[in-house]
Length: 518
Image (cartoon, rainbow, N blue to C red; front, side, top):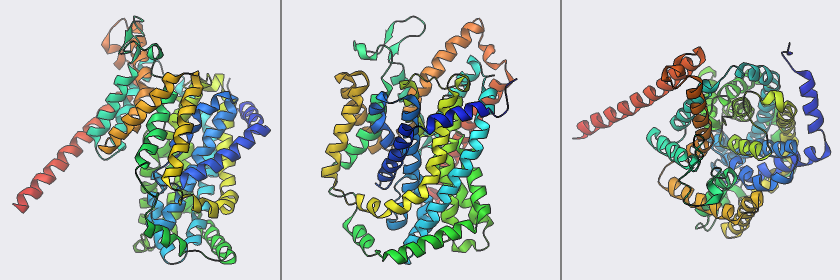
């Protein structure tokens, strides 16, 4: 009988993690994540996509630990520009800015950063302790998923992602459907005949995922940044310079922030639990989870009127949840092969790149690598506090880089990374094509993330659909003859219905406002 908590696998994972190479790349990934996180508009997905092509030469566990460390570092560092300039470095830091920036305007920027660092550390550590213990049993539970269940899970994942990402469900669905169409560029799994390949041999197996990821995240961001003279407005840069303080004052304020966080243990625990729970749901992401956690803290606060004016509890709730979500997204990524966020989608690409097949059986075939990644996130959470204190000043200087210097260097790395996977110029060109597609979509308000996740979920849905049809002798009712499948179908229909009702309600409100103004 399989142990509920597989201590042997956990020990094997720790052995992989504690190798010198893994630890060096963990620290390097964390620092790289810090650097990317403070750049407004960038994210962990941008940085992870950038190094994806270069990670092919690394051992599997080292490459995955590097990706995980970048994710954790970027999640934390996004709070720095949010606090100092009211410019969230990452989407998840938007909730942190609500109270962090008012504190900074009061001359207490270091206090706010201390709150963010300590709560982020505690949230990450608590989340990873839980996830390391539950990922094995959850993978055992997922072993009961057959072809029909995986087909419905993939459909449900696409619907949820389209619903929660971006401002428009319609635009999210259009982006997801475009991703499914691109995912169909391959040989048919049924007949072996090429579909939509336009004669390109490089598309016969499928659209190469690494160039697509690099193009849609890193190249797109660089192309959008290229026309700008500066990363930040001159006014904001001046405001940042005016907030400089002496080292002794900074350390005192940092310590006050750390002490204040330790004085709110229940907020840390609740926010971490919210982060882990919502992180397990594909597509929710840190931004949604952080605002839910922030709202929960505000509802329970003794002085809710202080929120938005520099409340310590608001920063603690947002940052503890932010780092907990990072760990939570690993559960569906590993156990179902469905990424919980954009960055975990890049990690999924890294898994495929190194021959690791995510899904219900991953804990039977690559348990040590999974626990190495989870352990890496645990260690990264511990290192966030000391490294964050050490690197705060240098990180704040990065935002002064001119796009004219930054863009060419990063674009060169993007194309070299795309080329390196298969030594193919076709892949480098594909990265540019996807970069231009990303610019087209983002400038018209269409989210890119549903498209990326559709590239992953499309083949999963198609292959399992074909397999289920064969198992059910082409009987469509076979897809309903399973309690798990019925639950997933119900959730799928509920998600669609909720979005349709929401659209109709908004339309009715617009019509009633138009009547009043008329």
